[in-house]
Image 1 (cartoon, rainbow, N blue to C red):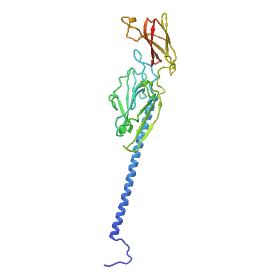
Image 2 (cartoon, one colour):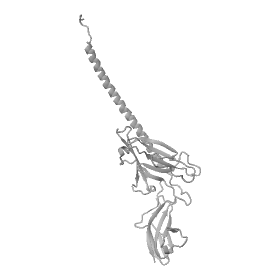
Image 3 (cartoon, one colour):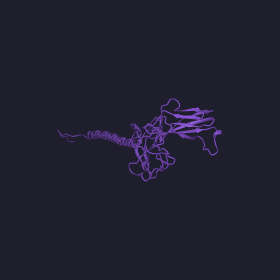
Image 4 (cartoon, rainbow, N blue to C red):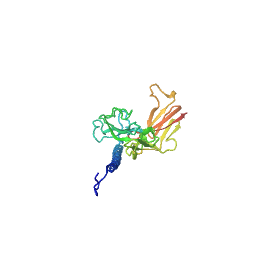
Amino acid sequence: MTHWRGNNGMTLVELIIGMTLMLVVLGATLAVLTSVQHVSRQDTDQNAAQDAARTALDAIARDLRNVAEPSPALGTPPVAQPTIERATAYDIVLRNVDATGGSSGANTYSVRRVRYCLSAQTDGTANLWQQTQTWTSQAAPAMPSVTGCDGTGWPVSRVVADHLTNRVGGRTDRPAFSFNPTSFSDPKQIKALRPELWIAATPGSREARLTTAYYLRNQNEPPVSDAQGSPFTVTVNATGVVLNAFGFEDPEGGALTYVWYDTPPDACRKVGDPPPPIKIGSGISLSYPACRGQHRFSLTVLDDKLLGTDAPAQVVNVT
């Protein structure tokens, strides 16, 4: 075998080793690139989900700023119209002014119904739905179904945020909606609302939390009383009783109407009388010729939109 002096080159073994090292380096580079692309894609998806959630919060804010109160009472007899009709940890239904014009005709004030609800998935793929209902009649139609999210019967339904993890794993400590006061018994008592959305574009990945709070500045609030104890008095005299209300005011500064009721003893009732309690008069003060026996007097105070507050009843023995 001839050996060429000064001939530079590589043996076959050296070549194989070099190629192997190059493949290892190339594989590691590809792995890093794939990982970077995966992280970048996760970040892109997460940012997109967070942007959608921010847009949803903005939509909720617009709807709450545009609530349909104050608005006049409707019907015969007139009935105060609600602002918030449903309020749970994952579901709210409110009425506001329809800016798009779908509500018209006899619906003079263009009121519509809007629902926001969080679907029940617990695997991190829950959606926030916005559902709307419009009408052209004076009175609002029946509310579509709120059984499930999204409920059936709503003319318009769309997803406004996705990949929400409020309920992930079945947890219940991250409500989508919180309210002030927390102990309300009727949605019309709500003064503020705080939505809170948890987002993770990929199940099990890092979560983001978006929240804000809205004060219902247009919410019509019922009359309130600052009286200590009962907000009305009952004075028995020779001709019956004198009823006096005090300490009531309308948070919006409107005029108040006082309506008095009596549940009289059976001996005082006549054939044809309406079932008790019986309306006996109105006004901040009322003289009433109550018959002898035990009476249960009650008072309802209404604002100029017929939203009312019931004062605790008092039982009085008229002699």
